[in-house]
Image (cartoon, rainbow, N blue to C red; front, side):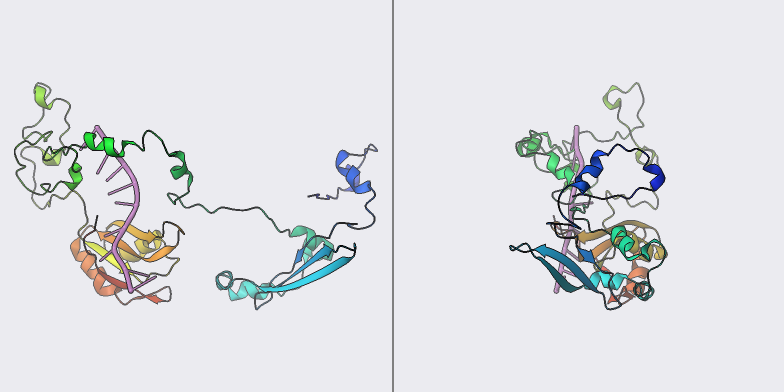
Length: 298
DNA sequence: AATGAGCGG
């Protein structure tokens, strides 16, 4: 592509032709010669209708003008405020007032822009691991390294998935258990093992439900509009109390919202309030459904 | 219509 730039006369002091100017002096005839003039796209009118005017050089060398009328996508239109649409019918002013300048001010980019969602398939993070990557082969071999820290079983489940994880006391054969005595530098067996204060001997456990993971107090939200994002949910639900997690299910392929998500509350009572208030609540032109979530299936 | 992802010693 050739881009012709106009320079102010003062900048044009050198008599020596610049290489960039040479092409313009060649023998292509007037205007665009054998080359079709660039495509011109008009601004959409209040109905979102645009005109695309393009030129084509036919086989016989004659120029053909092609005018196409298109309507911009409904979605894009919906995002324009009425005011913005109205502004588009205003007469041009400023630099755009001159017809030719206007054509130069707006150009159509043919550059392909890939919109990437972090962690979406095909994103860089996924591409790094080439097939045959030694780490990828670790799948089966990794099972050998997988030793449950609660029950000691090898190659079956991770600590977090242990069927005994909520049982107290842990069964025989328990390995790597936080010591029941406060760790000290002199006790060789527990050397280097950090025991959080809440787990230490004599710690006050009143009012603490020991939970590995806060999947309780989990609320399922369905009928979300497709452009509801996690921060929106956070805003909406945190008015009821502290929220430990929000999640929206996205289609792995398209990156589109699947229209449902989950909100976890720190306090069950707040989750109850949220369900009571927000189920049936109109949000973003849809009626939300807010219910207790079923436990996650794995 | 619809019940989540990823992280590991």
